[in-house]
Length: 141
Length: 141
Length: 79
Length: 79
Image (cartoon, rainbow over all chains, first blue to last red; front, side, top):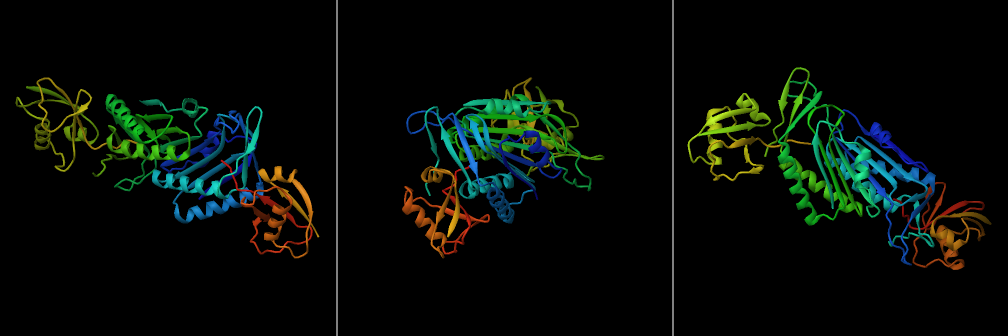
């Protein structure tokens, strides 16, 4: 299985992702992009940006571990993961997850499994920013 | 809900798809691409191309109907569907399905539902071509 | 009466052409057209075939008219 | 003994800084560090906090050493 894991202040490019994922045997490419929404903050303001920070070495370690666990029960050929750091404006993508598999079923299963785990385990934190306020997002356990 | 349905001999472009799907409230963009695999034919040859033909007016009618049914139980903001006609080489994408929704769960559900229905109902047919042979793909019911 | 028939996918191979004309009995139904096809061409008897007219799938008992344009569709395989 | 502490996310707001140094008792455990944090800073008592050293999550009973670099992590919220 080919694996790409990265986190930086620069966005991923579609061509880079597809070049990495495509192969003669991968009939299904599933690309998920998480996009910053203009949600409403507690004071009624709209979000204009998210700010992301991370423990970068642990992002690599935990994401690699996730990929290892994923390959135990998901039959995929390649995975491309990228996450942005810093400020990301509404409408911009902050996370890219691309999976290549023989058929769509495996690609979709892997995508869902990986994102559910990622959301609970990979040490990245986000803050919502409006024009006046900012607040860290703290998920309830 | 925004809906794009097209079928032609020209590939869809990523920028066109994302421009269509993105909005300030869509936090999840799920893009599926079906790619031609180099499967092995009955005589042992490898597939080099697929050839697609369709009843184009019915593709539009059936796909529109699918989208209408999908919106009854999937909460999505936009759907972009494109399918190629004619010869498509191994490694090339023949079908694009992009879904924009508030969260990833809705986007993934819509994608799975739509593709399952599409595969059974939309009048498109493919032939597998090797260097020496060609054979129509006939799914078993 | 005469009906104009267009076939798709593997049905073109069985018909030897993508478009043919058939002389059929007045009052024939969609199911009757399917039977005519399977009697006169080497189509596998178990192959499900849909018949479309005016962008709509016909029910088994719908009556075919003189000069109808029918589309014969084997199981779809897009994607 | 002295430990170097780096906090992430909302814990930075509670600590007033992303990096601090704490004087802690010899033999303190990871669980003890969490208790120290919750006693000395206005951290919600129910907030789950993970402690990382050398790119590894510490178990509750692991012993902290002099000059350790610890990373304090609130619930993650990436994506």
